Figure 1 (cartoon, rainbow, N blue to C red):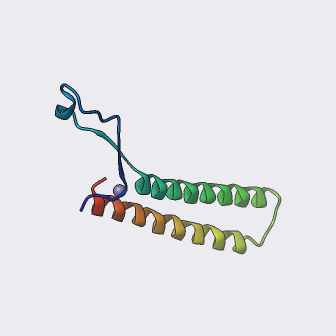
Figure 2 (figure 1 turned 180 degrees about the vertical axis):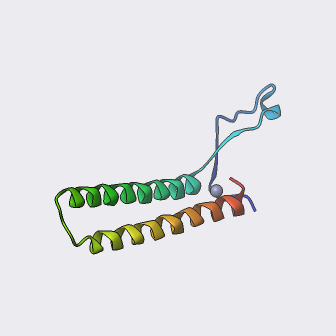
Figure 3 (figure 1 turned 120 degrees about the vertical axis):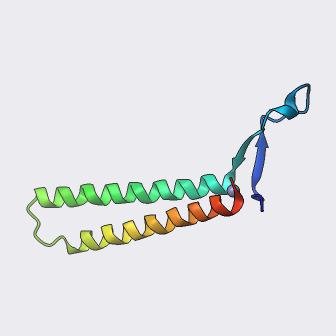
Length: 91
Ligand SMILES: [Zn+2]
């Protein structure tokens, strides 16, 4: 099944136009990819916070460790959603 959200860009019917594959853009794919990027950014931010906490000499890092673990799980979930979409829609 092709993606319902396919938007065809730069595609014109003219001499030779049909022999060139159209450039396509899937909005849902882009949204899911952006969500993966946001999750990665969150992990990086949390890790920098953890490094700063260590530098300050804080001993209890359990809440940051938990947040990093949760952020990694969220990133993995979003990555799986992205990959499932690409697999299903071929975009
Ligand atoms: Zn798609």
